[in-house]
Length: 101
Image (cartoon, rainbow, N blue to C red; front, side, top):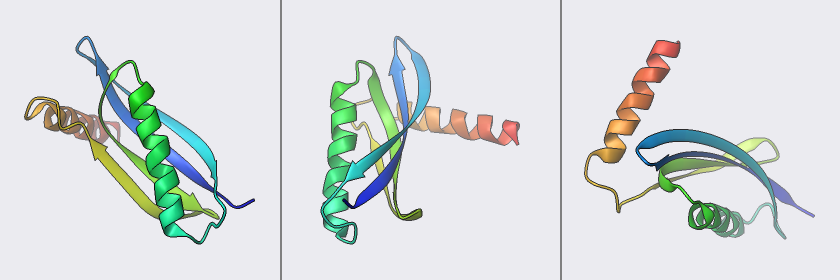
């Protein structure tokens, strides 16, 4: 059965503590050439992860690969958070990445 790989990077928060997590999933589809079917399945995986989380999801990105090649990237952001809150975390992560290199 055809499949695709989904790599999920999430930034979430609880009690003022921000953390990042990464997950991988293998998803099965009827046709790995059907981009709409892959998008629908990917959206469902991301939505299920957000809805099942006990923490507040701030933002994230899902990378979708078919046969080892990235075919799409899905970005998501919590619009219910205060203005600037997500931007401050993005800035913090960007600074941490620069320091790490």
